Length: 300
Image 1 (cartoon, rainbow, N blue to C red):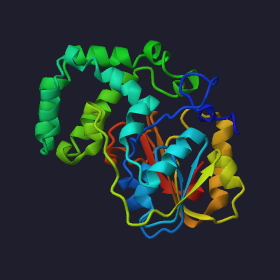
Image 2 (cartoon, one colour; image 1 turned 90 degrees about the horizontal axis):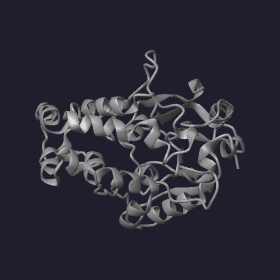
Image 3 (cartoon, one colour; image 1 turned 90 degrees about the vertical axis):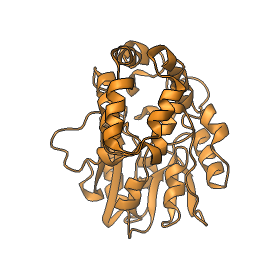
Image 4 (cartoon, rainbow, N blue to C red; image 1 turned 120 degrees about the horizontal axis):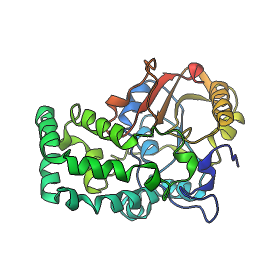
């Protein structure tokens, strides 16, 4: 098990103790992968909560890999037909967000107001509503304090924070507004999950063609025959990883990739200005700084 990545611990805060279910659902818009992987064959993806594997398995043979056995078991249950509800409240990420949403009434975010916002489908109206009724000074101050390093350290290990910009709260607010300016709330399940905590299940294909693998992505791909995969969905597994692991993973991806393979990699970090392959604004999950879509042979 690679310790070059903090994900091996199966915990957000400490490397000691039993591994935990971190995600009850994925906050990644797999429509990005569906478009990027069109006409591709075999797909490698990070299992996480199983959402991406389920979404892609109707059109592709999928290998879903995870370093956390608890997360992998949960994803397998989901692929076999289990719903989100129990896992949604059990995931560490969901519990952290639920704790944050408990403060919503204190900043003027009543459930009625949030539901009215989420019912909108005109993006111009959404931005006006956001600026006038939700993105208030009281909310900004509270949100930025909640996402300050001092508070985040109570929940996350240092490795999960090192790559974040110091003004992450302000940056995330801007990402949210940018997303509300591009995607209709009424048809965006990710907006409802973020603001209300309401889970959404992925549409299930008639047959889910998913194979599961326990281990870290680099180790698994290093052992595969050359040219094994036509596409790779890597979630944000490099967030917090050591540079040595990034190097290993990039070599492993290029080894396991077919000639025209594509890779999708996400990150909460801010993108470099020259990253022309960034599709973060197209991701309806509204959270990401980077959704890098590129040739697998240019992945480094």
